[in-house]
Image 1 (spheres, rainbow, N blue to C red):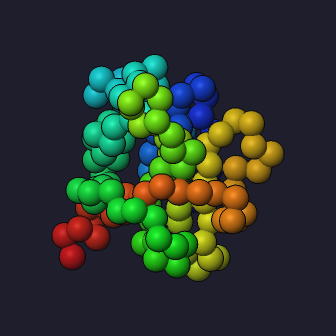
Image 2 (cartoon, rainbow, N blue to C red):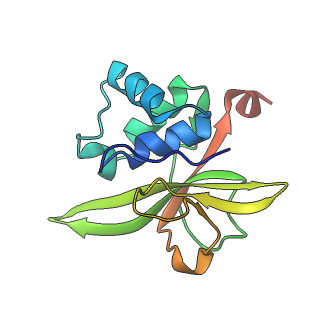
Length: 142
């Protein structure tokens, strides 16, 4: 997996799905548009339905519920993380990032354009509120 940088200020959900699916931001953005999903829609930053539908488009299944973050060791091998979580005018907002644990160890792929390095291992600085486990359709069926 490689990080995908968000090309829109509010495109972290699209970029996170693109990273998981192994596609470009532009391809995930086009797929999202075909599903009625746009970075400019505030629901993309405060609801999980949009990223779930976009993940499904690319053959991935998101767990039906969000799990409160307890520790990095307790995370599944692939998850969407809700970081930079905050409430504005009674609506929760967050930044999406991808957690991956593989043979090279744990890593967070953060799509934020302002980061010098979008492959993050500075776990003490990242403060997830909760996560959603992600599986491929093959993993769900087995």
